[in-house]
Structures are given as C-alpha cells and as structure tokens.
Length: 179
Image (cartoon, rainbow, N blue to C red; front, side, top):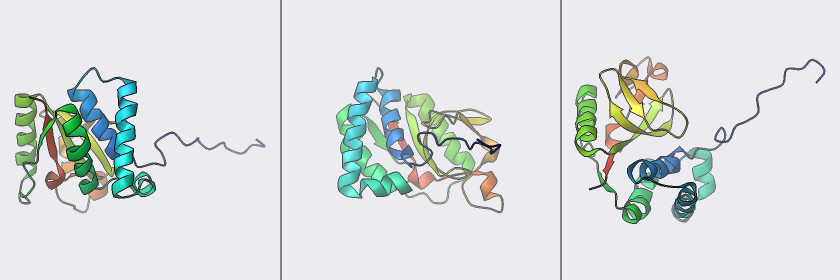
C-alpha cells in the first residue's frame, strides 16, 4: 500500500456498547448451564426487542445500556424465563467502604454459588460479572475478555487517579443466583 502503515481493522464489539445485554446472557450461561449458542441467540433477540421497546435499540447500541434499562430487562425477561433470583444489597447504601463491599460480595459468592453484576467506570465504562473475590483480585466472567481486577486498582469514589482505577458502583450492583 505504497509504504503506508495499514491500520488495524475494527473488531466486533469495538463500535457497539452491548456489554449490558451480553452480561445478562452470561448470567444465564453461568447460572443455568448448559446454555447453548442457539439458546443464547434466542435470549439475545428477546433482550434486543425489550431494549427497542423501552429505550430504542440504536441508542443502546451506540451509547450503552443504563442501569435502569438493564435492571428492567433482568426483572422482566431474564429472571422469570430462567428462574434466577436477584437482590441489590447496596441499593440504598451510599456510605459503604470498598472492604465492606468486597467482603459482602465474597460472602455471597461463597454461600450462594451465584454471580454479581457490577458497573465499572474509570479505566473501563463497562458492565461485567464477578464470579469470585480473592485476597488480591476480583475474578470476572466477562464478555470482553477481562479476566480480573486487582483489588488495589479498585475504588468506590473518583479521585485524582480515576483514569488508573476501576470505579465500582455498589448502588448499581445486583447479586444473582438460582435456588
């Protein structure tokens, strides 16, 4: 190409903001195995239809899915179809420390064998799932190949180093499990 450097091609997912719906698909895949590709496609269509009805799909694909839209899809589509229970233990708890938040997640994950839906900002603006909390990390079940978040790189409040930190949002966190 005449000595010109060839730019990397866009990859699927580079230009869309569908991490929210993918999180919900992965909740079912994690909690209700086996969950096949065909079943995933069927649920994906239901979730996209739901988003289209409630807020407009083009907007969601372009700018992402907000907490209210994601919660509504969880309550109206995912949980009733797949027998998944949910709770939001930090719904009204704005004053919580990082240690309290992570300890509560750890206890829930060990006791229920569930998964935790969290909202990230800072380094990433992303919805993801926490499958385990260790002394050093949060281990993820993620649609964009994130595998872990180091605890020392996590925070609950913005600071001067916000772009270097993973901001976690307890009030937007949902605990999910099956009985």
